[in-house]
Image (cartoon, rainbow, N blue to C red; front, side):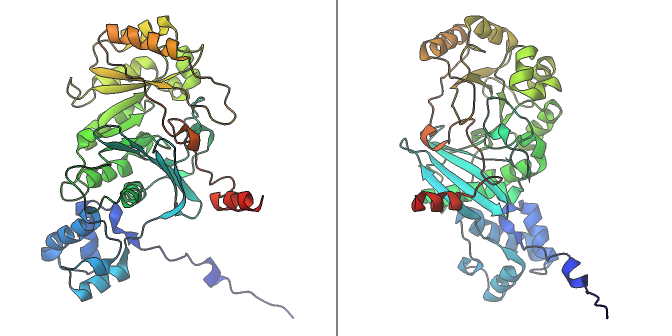
Length: 384
């Protein structure tokens, strides 16, 4: 006697989850409403504008809350789409007021976002663009985690929504915001995910929604030179460069991407960045590593390297993380470095470390998705 197993059902592809409207651009939302037979094409622009306002100005997560949308249309929207927020696996608040969220957007997909008060006009949200990173910058904790995948526009926008939920900033305020700036300086290299980053910026900056000015949105890159011009053209975002060294030999070690796009190519790409001017300066990020890149000679070399570029230099005291061999430069060394830059005419603020006690400072972000889940860690701590 033989038994034959019918695996046809088991191997059938699982149904796709409903589309989250939070990640669609205005045109994408309009088309989605047409494709789902929510409304005819001639009504789609008006309906999309209604739905857009509820999602991005009022921050609703339930179609039934859309009071100027007919009940039957609400039901159709709920059947075809979702507005659900991702799961907040862990929320931490630093003694200095910095907030960090570990956000699970899908099974095995976790990212960190950090809100830093008193940065920019009022407060800045550091968002991630990838789960993990491919760049392997040796001083960066995030770089020790392998890339899992790019985040979608919905997953990027969701980080902003989670922060605004926590800060109680719905409806979207025009004045007296607590979240006034967005910086793509979290996990991942944004220019390796430009399509979704660009869509997310379009959504975040729309005047009838979250309405953050593009001049208050900064994208930080380690130097993916061919994508600099498309970034500027498509997003009009402010540009930040994760620099950290003034010569190729050292930068090859600190930022291995330099082996592909060296400093000469990078500087040419920066000088050609669309819209660069004294009013739209490039920010160079320079982490201060004791005995490695912090000498007066390095400061003078930095002045020469960026000569002629409208720029400022953020000096970042190195933030330690478990297992690193790097140390932070002492304060006098950092101040001496800054003085040389200032004398040359470059603003060089020394970034005050924020959120170190919850590993939320620059270079410390790292999802634990490939390790023990945060919930398991909490359970172990409770049982101890």
